[in-house]
Amino acid sequence: MSGESASAIQKGQVDLLDFIDWSGVECLNQSSTHSLPNALKQGYREDDGLHLDSDADEQLLLYIPFTQVIKLHSILVKGPEEEGPKTVKLFSNKEHMGFSNVNDYPPSDMAVLTPDNLKGKPVLVKYVKFQNVRSLTIFIEDNQTGSEITQVQKIMLYGSTVETTDMKGLKKIEDH
Image (cartoon, rainbow, N blue to C red):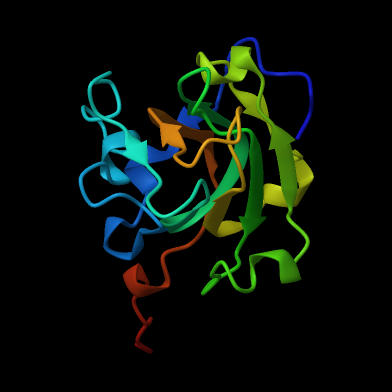
């Protein structure tokens, strides 16, 4: 990801929250009391008292499928100065990843988050690598200070939808 962060979200880029397929969202190594919806869902992610915590160690692996194909422009990952995420790797359209095989694949992009990013400054992704995204896997490898628990207060994905034809909506034309 570019060291240059987006100062403002570009026109035409929207919060992709409405296009997340919630039935397929997963998060490995999340705390049972501080789980992914706290950082990702509308309303929850705006509450500073709610957050996502890692459980056994500092790593988190998030899988976010979408209800339609999207183009990812930037990502916002907000967290505290010390336990906030540091190294974040993004994988486009990689399913069934676990901690045992996450390092077997090169990430589509990666970033080392700065204190500005953790306060809410979005990070631009390599846009060409995220043009036809059906799912996004986010691997949070470590945190700012190397502590046992990583804490994420908010995750927002910005981009746009890819105009596609809904094949189910098409009707066969009958011969007259």
